[in-house]
Image (tube, rainbow, N blue to C red; front, side):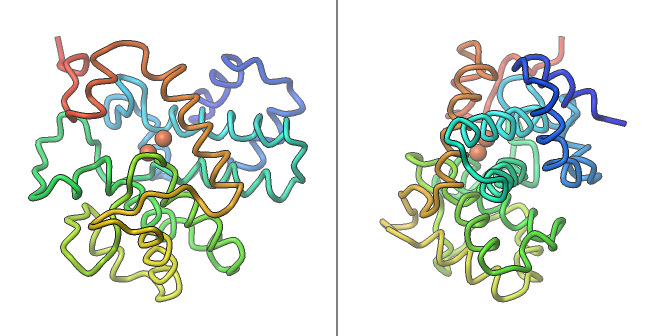
Length: 236
Ligand SMILES: [Fe+2]
Ligand SMILES: [Fe+2]
């Protein structure tokens, strides 16, 4: 039903049909989930400037696939990296002009959204996290996708996450992995390091290519990443 966004992006990136089929087979299950479909709507979930969150995520998945292909990766590693892309920004609530106040700087969207993404991904797509090998790599990739920007460490202090209640209900091995990843190279309340695994690292690279190449094309969209307020979204 909502495949148009994928089709539009495949055309934008001029992806050959054979690759487009491969990418679709890797992402279809995630894309078809109601929570994902919701995020394809730019009115409900604008992400970078006026680009919808879903469109941003699918662009990242396509670019991640292209990097893996260029590196001649096997299908399993490519699928894993593409899966990280599909999960990386599944945060709870739209962040621009949200009016949500946080009591400390490091609890704001930029620092905490990778944690919300990991929690939501594990809640909505549990089958991707059953195998320990997969779980470790996928969670670590999501948690550190913003590198060199820091991520908030789960350190026992109040994080003010918008999906805190979901974190509490996750299986302990998932919570444990989110804690392990988010506290590696911890400095104060944050962790600053890239993903331990190449799948997460190429995904993080794809995120920058997409964000600063395609999504953010004007100054209001770029400044919104820092201030959380975007003039372009104010209804005329
Ligand atoms: Fe992000
Ligand atoms: Fe992103």
